[in-house]
Length: 535
Image (cartoon, helix red, strand yellow):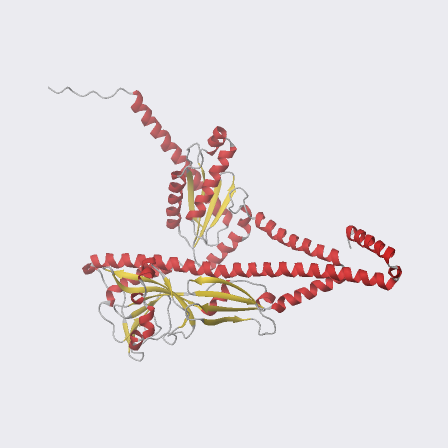
């Protein structure tokens, strides 16, 4: 009990001593003390419980929003894939006679379907599987060029916690092209499928005009015809001569949505997740963490799309157990334990914040050099094990000291922030952007070769030089050095090699600049050439 509270109780007891002689009795004084402690206990436990509920709801809501963010990312990428496929089809139509067949399409008598990469005949070089009912139409041979484009697009996929699978369905030629190789016993189609109401309802030609103009749309959660799982599909139409000839879609199994969020085991076991279809008034279970119905649950939800909500019902027993623990602690040491609880929570939050700041450059918000021995080292090791390349771009600002000396360090800081913001805008989510120190930066590009790194470096040089970053209307340029980490090579050696390339490029730029300046001076100070007069 704190000293101010002891003073209040002392004054209250004094007043009782004046008016009631019975207050001198120890039992009454103890009862009064217990009553006041119980009152304080109720206030403290009630406040702590209210805070815990709000924080837990916000925490779970943030995780639900992460599901929405991931799904929206897949949707916009799917739209881009469809636009690319539409453009490719238009290009193929222009050079129709010059196109050659890129793969043999087999007929599977037992399955009564055609395709390739099904594990029955030797695989070809395509990454995906072609599946269609009956005998193959000769026109499908031309679409093998489209499969090359789709393979390249789908190879760009980022690692998402949500399980998903891309596919292309041709409405004109009645076939599927899946983004991975599927064994024959896992996916089969029939002629009847393309005649079902389910198929007619799902494809883009049956959608509203506003959805088609947007370029993408979500389906209702439904039982997939082939995998027999509840899925949500994001689709985008593919056009040929302004007519819809197919859809690029991405299937997201409903059960996999729970994998995109990470919750403590105890909290997860106190949650029920489900989807709610607004138009159909339908509830679709995702995950059952508890089954008690004695107390009403605490719901948290967010919109997955316009017609579908994702709900998380929190078991009230999760908070009851929390309240019991707080009550037991507060009975023994009411104020001290509650205060220590706040301190420990604050300490935990600060510890996490300090851990984040330890790897973050405060000026630019990029990573600092500490990630070299942790995050980057692990990524390089993983890529080497998978025989995947890892590229490095090192660059620094040209004439940065002149900017600092001329305009001051505040403008120099703005230049560094301009560079860092441009890096963040132009790099992928998987790329690691680092400020090595001063005006020197580094970008680690997982799954990228040297050619891709050089293209990225050129784009960065152009983008950084194209923008103004302060009211003086000055620009800043960079010099870059690119390399790829070789197998069994240390990160330090790769950085040293990239650094040498950087300074070689920087020296070449300086020499070219001097040569250009000499040519300009010669042009200015030499007398202009004389031309003979016309008669």
